[in-house]
Length: 231
Image (cartoon, rainbow, N blue to C red; front, side):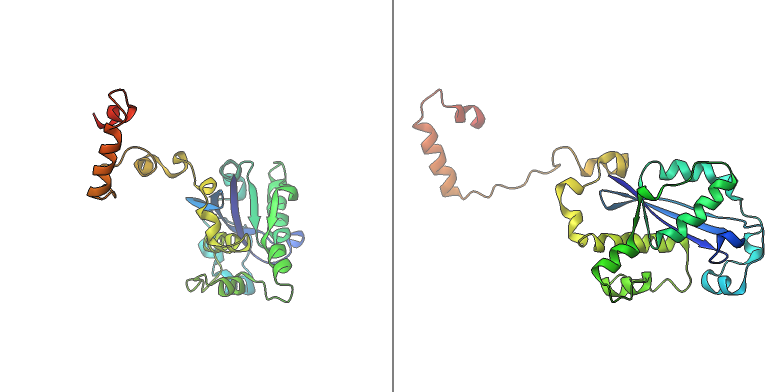
């Protein structure tokens, strides 16, 4: 099962009044395990950067001035997310901004039916809160010391770990049906998943047990199938 953990940074809180997306970060999961594949971009919002927003993410108008427009990256973005479910913290905010940008380039909007909101998950588990991303990282012992400022890709990576904890903890990734197929981890790692051992494991039988086994096989006669294996 493929899922995409997604986060955005913006110029403010209200896309209906001119605020725009300035950064998108995506992390791919397969059976709730990060595959290492990510998608990230900064965007030129074609407007000024309010001081309050700059204090949150540190992305200045000057820094963003030579970055692509949303219309320049929409194809790559939609190709990366594909038909996967989208894992988002406070999803209505990010989806509202994304659909505003998508509508502006005449593409099909994202449906909330494919979205899993980790804020809603956290509130069900801990109604008293707090349930911010930082608070959830502290609760689950996830290292967010590098998060001095908000960043879409960093926040998506942290959210991927939080999501796994909200789903039941890291042990969920240890079941056999949660192991990503070889195609997901790359050809270079294929030998970790298939093929015989380069050095066979030593026998755990004692010398007495091996002798007893040979005596038992000898009593079975010349047609005993065990003799084929011994040969």
